[in-house]
Length: 70
Image 1 (cartoon, rainbow, N blue to C red):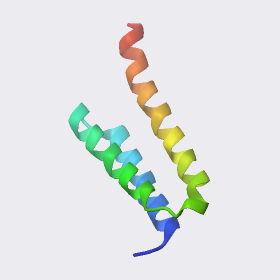
Image 2 (image 1 turned 45 degrees about the vertical axis):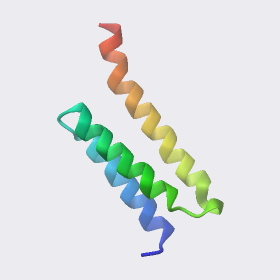
Image 3 (image 1 turned 90 degrees about the vertical axis):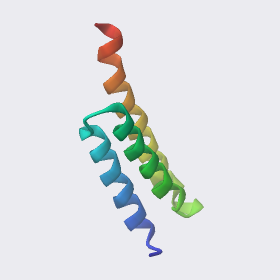
């Protein structure tokens, strides 16, 4: 497989699964998988990958923030 859009799609799927993960370890595994897919994206398409990374960070903050605030 060598389709950067497919890599991005798979990374997005991993991020979605991370959001639905029942525990922290599984969530981290999905986030790691997403990161691995993003690393396969050619450098000239990294802007799209950076958008996914930003979404990943935002997702982590949404999961952590309520625990900190309460």
